[in-house]
Length: 287
Ligand code: SAM
Image 1 (tube, rainbow, N blue to C red):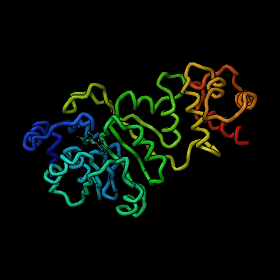
Image 2 (cartoon, rainbow, N blue to C red; image 1 turned 120 degrees about the vertical axis):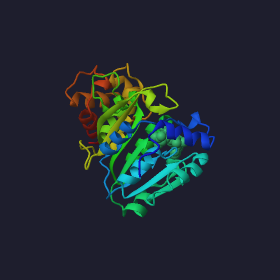
Image 3 (cartoon, rainbow, N blue to C red; image 1 turned 180 degrees about the horizontal axis):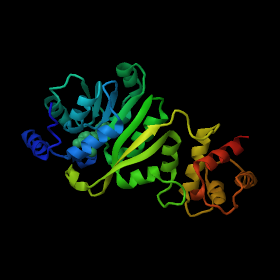
Image 4 (cartoon, helix red, strand yellow; image 1 turned 45 degrees about the horizontal axis):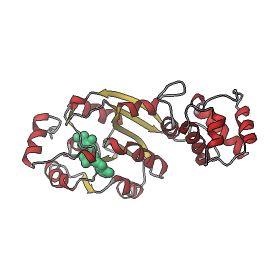
């Protein structure tokens, strides 16, 4: 079946036919560029073996492409007004299940079990930007078997996920994402590829799940507490950041000893530490 909705004319026709009113609160910016759609599907490496979870199918633009490339697509859409439209635009496919639900409340592990025998799924989406971080962290922190997450996000957020120490964009999100996955920015996407146009630039990023975390850390929850404490007070030294944080139960002396164990100056800032160093810090406290 030809990829109909990637064509802006067809998208506008569907929107008019159903008198669909875009809801800003749901982050509704629909893709209208076939090159970008092709790029996303090919970056995700979707094959006829795969089950794909699509978050926020909208009117089904990307869902049509996914249905052609994958074995099974499960698409979760929060906006009830889009469900009758999806029934129409996806009527030609028998391998798509649409669920009307909030993705943050869906048991994705159960979906992977039901539709993919618990084998790793692929997550592909043009994400609603207002909940990018909870969606991605939720996917990583739950036990969902995942091969990769290939998503459209705000450009600035894609940059934050990809950078290392020394960049102003480096922060808790960079470290969390890089602990779980290998990020790769596939393409930058300008506002004119969407209807309506968003106020920000966008980017497609692929997060390939690590089989095993790249660092050995005995207590990941403690490491992420240290990360949060360091970046909450970005302009303070690491030592002060950790001392001032109610989440960190260690004495000033223990904190100094831990920082010294890294072989860095006591006045170092958290933003200078690599993932490996945060892991070492957490392991020092644990020992
Ligand atoms: N995939 C479509 C496309 O590319 O044209 C639409 C993408 S649009 C940026 C985001 C979609 O996510 C919208 O359809 C919106 O209604 C949906 N959405 C927003 N919040 C959601 C949530 N919590 N759970 C599921 N879907 C959500």
